Image (cartoon, rainbow, N blue to C red; front, side):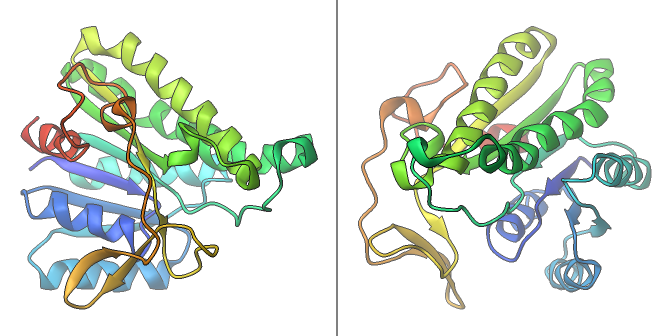
Amino acid sequence: MPTIAVVGAGPGMGLAIARTFGSHGFDVALLSRSRSSLDARVADLAAEGVSARGFAADVLDTESLTGALEAAAEHFGGIDVLEYSPGGPEPKFLTPSRLTAADVDLQMRYLVHGAIAAVGVVLPAMRKAGAGTLLFTTGAGSVDPTPMLGDINTAGAALRSWVLNLHKELQPEGIQAAHVAIGAWIGDRAPAGTPSALRRPDLPAVLGPARPARPRRDDLHPVNQVDPETPASPLVERAVAG
C-alpha cells in the first residue's frame, strides 16, 4: 500500500487529509507533538478502516522531525506522499512595518526550515523510485498577504517560493511538489470578519459567516500545468492516483 505522512496531524485539516487519503487505500503516518492526541486520532482512523500510526515530532526540533519521518518510512516501507501543514505559533497580528526579524524567524522555523528538513528525509527514496508527491499547505496570505498577519504571511510566501522552485527542479524526475493556499481560518478562533472553516458532526467542514474572497486564478493550481479553472482538490486526486 502507498503511504502518506501528515506533518501537523491536528484534529481539523490534518485529520481530514488523513481520512481522505486513507479512504483511497493509503496507509497513514501521523506526526504531531502530542502522543496522547496521536493515539486518539489513530483510533478514530482505525474505526473507519484506515491503517494509521502516530509518530511524535516537533517541527522546531529538526532531529525530532527527521527521526519521526525515518521511523514512519521504516514502519510502512516508505513514504509516497508528504503533506506538510503544521499548526504554527499564533500570529502576533503585526503589520509588516512593525515586524522585527525575531517575529519572522519563529514562523520561518515552523514553515520553511521544517519543510526543508522533512523533504530531506523523504526525497532520496522518491528520487530512487522516480515518483512521489510533496504537498505543502498554508493560508492564502502566502499569495495575497493581509497586513495584520505580517509575520506568518512573510514565512508562507517564502515557503511557497521554495515549493514552486522545488517543483521545477523535481518535475523532470517524476516528482510533484505543490503548494495549496487556503483562504479560510481553520478552527474556532478566527478574527472578526475572517472566513473560517469549522468542523460539525454532520459535515466535514463548513464556511463561517464571513464570505471568503474569490480565489485568484493562480491560487487554484499554483504549481501544476493544468486548467487554472480547476479547483485545488485534483492535487489530492492526482497524488492518490500516483
